[in-house]
Image (tube, rainbow, N blue to C red; front, side, top):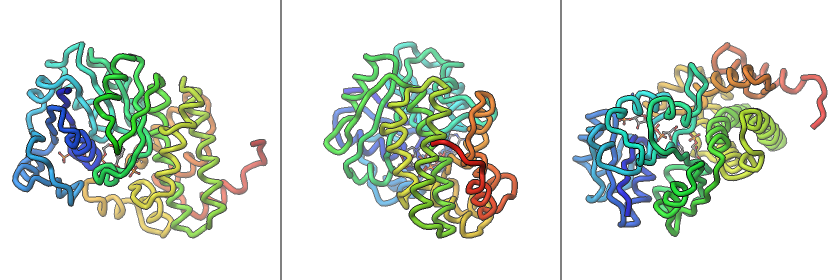
Length: 330
Ligand SMILES: NC(=O)C1=CN([C@@H]2O[C@H](COP(=O)(O)OP(=O)(O)OC[C@H]3O[C@@H](n4cnc5c(N)ncnc54)[C@H](OP(=O)(O)O)[C@@H]3O)[C@@H](O)[C@H]2O)C=CC1
Ligand SMILES: O=C(CO)COP(=O)(O)O
């Protein structure tokens, strides 16, 4: 039995809370940022805003008190969008303890600093750190469909405890010690999923989709390895696994944003249609390019995705530029 706080009641935090609650062995609290969202979940025992259709069990506590929630639990599973992780950790700082385990399930980079979530957390807090990645649509985890994820930590004891805590007959948990690889796999695939959506929205066919995934994998791996990740992590669940899921699965928010861009919709209209739901790749594309520039890594697909999102380039022109680059060795 562990005392686990789930910090963030978006689709993913809620799905993880449901998965943990089904085991009936943990003490669980789900914290949400917006007080009205907490009130609505308590009143309806459902997260109608981000994960409708799944009853929240009575023994899952729901809280708007971040400090008390952080104080009362040994494992802090942070599932806010990555842009809010820094603020959330800093707000909890006065009550954090060295023996608590902080698990980051957010998939992104800090916008201005290009930092991974482990680096953001390390800047303020004394906690033990782990990160959770892999191909895992919230809706499918909520529905207890078979899913495999990976938990990475350099703290072997923490990784093994979390593996026991999270594993169930519908959630298979692998562990490794490559925090950088798991974090970058989750963050970088969002950008390539946007591009896969563009290819689908433009109706460019299966050859183009396969090429995009393969060459996307190549540039993700280049940047991750230059950052210190292991190539085998990128070939595993957090890299290749999550890339395939989000580039092909219609549940992907990033891919959906890309499809709409490919069909000619403008970004502000697409974002407005998300109703507060996050597509991390939209922000992360800039931070990825920034990190790549710092490390001298070429990322042509990410470059073009940034141009489509933030520089007014048409999807058709971006594809033309990618297809007419000078010849390369594979
Ligand atoms: N959806 C999925 O299938 C998966 C998502 N992820 C990752 O999980 C993370 C969260 O995504 P997801 O659950 O989909 O989010 P959603 O898009 O479902 O929900 C958005 C969330 O943002 C929160 N939020 C808004 N403003 C703030 C703020 N200022 N401080 C803290 N939280 C805020 C909302 O909280 P509130 O309701 O209180 O306003 C809400 O929980 C992302 O990094 C995503 O990449 C990872 C794997 C799967
Ligand atoms: O990371 C995810 C599944 O593993 C979710 O992807 P999207 O954010 O694109 O929906």
